[in-house]
Image (cartoon, rainbow, N blue to C red; front, side, top):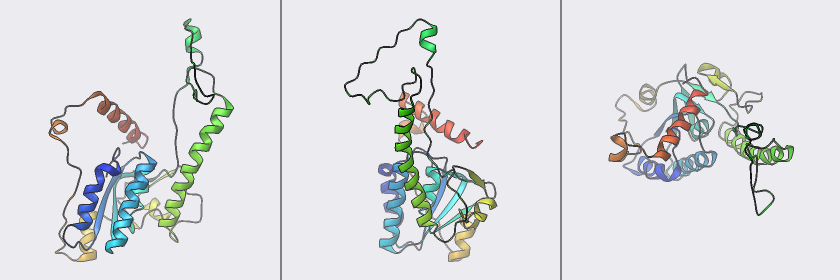
Length: 238
């Protein structure tokens, strides 16, 4: 599971993983620096719903990073396993933008904005930041953060360290285990064999790319998505 995924595209994959044959368990390969909190919540909820309905355990394995929305996805597992170098956490919500309040006047450009509704012009990057706009943004971010915290505390109940783990900080490998954000150091194949026997068979599932995507063609929207995705990974030095 990587960045930029959504519930609509993953739903058929998840349904097949739980429904094809009689799997003894479902394993999640998590490699995501984050993304939409709503999509993370929808995907995680779908996984948990199927796990409970079909009584199938779920194991999450973190690769390079499970941060922000990526960690939200990892909490869908009954346990979380990491590599010694996996980056884990970033339990927070971010809104990033730029401000250019002096740029227009410096170049003799007049900004003209007309709205129907006093709240339509919100955090305009070409105007000085207003305290009331920041307060409105906080009113948006805080409930999302609370939902994220509730997801983590609910799924990791009794495992988390007695400290504030919801600052947006990240931990690497064993440090994440020590904080209770993960259950141990392990890779998928050997761990599943230790749990279910050496004859365990791993059946991979994933979102199939179209012929258009496989040959590297991209429309402008996809290119912008790639740039945003790259920026997310760069936050963690990856």
